[in-house]
Length: 198
Image (cartoon, rainbow, N blue to C red; front, side):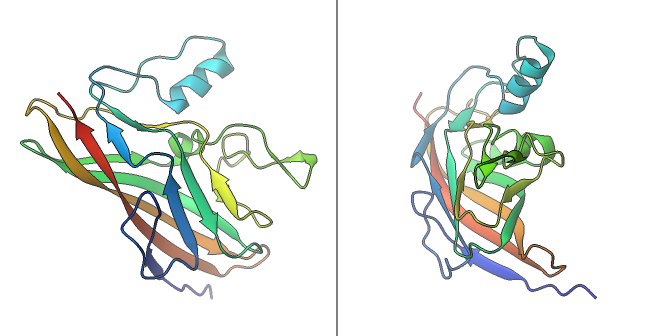
């Protein structure tokens, strides 16, 4: 029978909130504040799909949007695989209500697409997008991993004018020792300031 141990931790550095337990995973953002941009954009998924097809990327991120250039993940146990199942950004937009931006599946995998290899072996790809399973994984042997394409969150209602709010960053996943069926689920929270300057 598969055993499950639920680990709930709060962490981050620039994504901050501080943590009760940062012994499994920590997150750091390349910025501490994201600005709302009143136009459209193309997501990482749209860009990679267009590149594969030899076409131009469609603008699938609707106005208005904000972007997080990079997220850096650091895990303590070098001997385990750490799988990220979902990334979610949630916030309350003044005069509008709840807002949510989710990355999972292909959209999550597209956030890390640069070819990297394990131990110098060109046959073992570590890129999320280039893996046959397109899993978001920080593999055993690695402690630090990062996205290499910005996270775009669109369709933010800015009709209420200028505002500054705190967004919650939620990461859901699990840690697993290679060759074992034991999965240790984890949920990590952080925060990021989002500002509409106009």
